[in-house]
Every structure is written in structure tokens, then in C-alpha cells.
Amino acid sequence: MIFRKRTQKDTLDNGYVLLLDSLAKTSEELQSAYDTLENVTDPDLIDAYIYQAKAVQLRYKCLLESIKKMEGSYAKNPLL
Image (cartoon, rainbow, N blue to C red; front, top):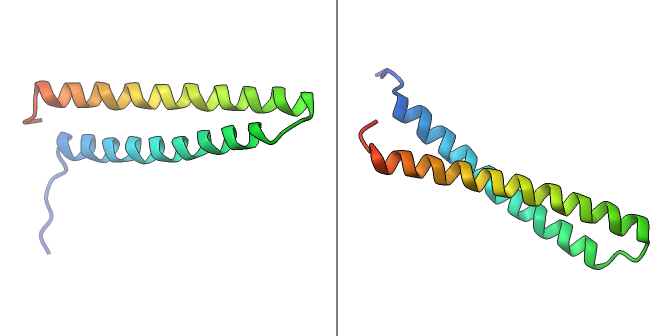
């Protein structure tokens, strides 16, 4: 069995994959929130689902910015 030392690049790659996975799940959650919002008629539920959709949108934006930042840092120094 061969063991190799984990490098900073391995850690970045794992973090990148986790961010992409979270972004995909958040995208699905956002679509679900929009679908639910379209079918709700109660004013209180409409408000609740609007807040939920907004929260998911903000999480999506944050994840996307993190991914872009990580891609930018890798583009500047691909030999990490």
C-alpha cells in the first residue's frame, strides 16, 4: 500500500468539489422553492416562501462567488 502526503492542492481540489456539489444542491433547492411559490395562494405562505427563496438565492450567490474566487486563484497559480 502506498501512502502519499496530502498537499495543499489536494485540499483545494476537495474543497472545490464540495463547493460544486453544494451549488448543485442549492440550485435544486432554489428551483423547488420557486415551484412551491407558484402554487401557493395563502398570503402568509407566499411571504414565507418568498423569504425562503431569497435566502436560497443568497446562499447560491455566496457559493458561486467562492467557486469563482477559487478558480481565479488556481488560474493565477496552477502549481499549488
